[in-house]
Length: 573
Ligand code: SER
Image (cartoon, rainbow, N blue to C red; front, side, top):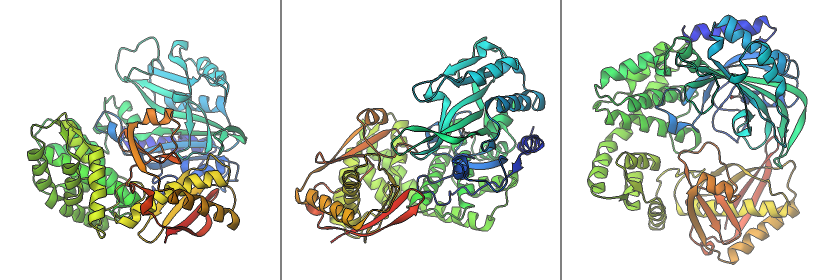
């Protein structure tokens, strides 16, 4: 079965059951500073899940294009993709668990003709926030799924939350298919041969700003089925790269390289395919936000091309195949031109950079921070690329040293434009670094003055002229409060506190109660920056080393950014 056919079958099935087919929304979320890309079909539907009336009714269905960078490390395995399509249907306060489970069963078994004996099911086990989902489990059982293949699992497995910190959420029931012939008696989520294909989320809660789950006024259903995975399963393939929308891309890369490095080939295919869809939203490679993700995808694909021994500029060859196999309209001229420019830009320095890396890292256990910084600043190697190159040789990167080199470089060069380092920096000049540190102070002062520990950064953008911080807060911040916030920040600056960072795993940081945007991170080691004992935040840096460099802090503007999100612009004088 081809992707097109599965999509058609799904839409037709739910249309027959009274659903309206809604648009496939943009990959760039509108009015949502919390995430860079649309990561699921429910994303554009948040206001309606919360209770607003949808113009097309209470039963909706669509195909949604999605980008997920949180699983980037897994790409290259059999089933994780950066870009994928998701089939979904929604009940906005209409049908709930029993009816949804029944429709899921009917679609999988009667329409797609999957073997019932190869289906495994997981349901929510229950905890202090919500009860055990016996309703779904009993329905699955009544429909004929063997009890042993229905497992009850905790929140970590069977609970779905929107990508931001707050929003609609709830327990889910997931459907898995066993990809080998000899099916075990019991369903076991740890056995990778059980591949998840569909997720029925029962969204009857809202996670509020205090992290508490409150009941929504309506019971919703939000489901998601990965197109690529399901097509692979329906055809009996053991990986997604065999399906109609990916195989021609793999064939092309196989023609370009005779090497037997399947992972690199899959990364080239996955990243360039994702890049085409991001470019199709008119995003250009750059040093900020979506543009920076795009740049890293293209550059990583090019490096893996080199590893495969491909010695010419090959991106176009693969991109042309993406155009051929997809049923989307593309702005081909723009996409090819941008890819070509980025490839030329990077190609010139990549070979040199790789040579330097080979030479300098010989005989070492650790790649020095200085080398990593040279590769970053002079050859355009994102840090994670150096980290990956090092890993291939069994080496580590001295990331603290990298940070130090970065900071020293700024002190030497006021005009350096090494590009957005990470986390919202528009350039690397001294002023943006200072403003970045001031942003941490501001966030902490907001929590204190507004008496709200749950205030979180929802977006940040820094230019050499000003900082801009978006944060969750339900009302306008009054001028007298802004004055107090300014005073607090300036009080800390006067104390000349030291700024330091520690490296730890994401788990350790979470345990220590460090606040920060934990989702959508590239790489697993994180940095925790502290300013004296005043503030502690998950952040990639860079920062000044002492507050004595900062000067006077002044808030220029406070305004609404989007629903429940405020925006402050501030300066250092
Ligand atoms: N939102 C859920 C998911 O992404 C179901 O669509 O899995």
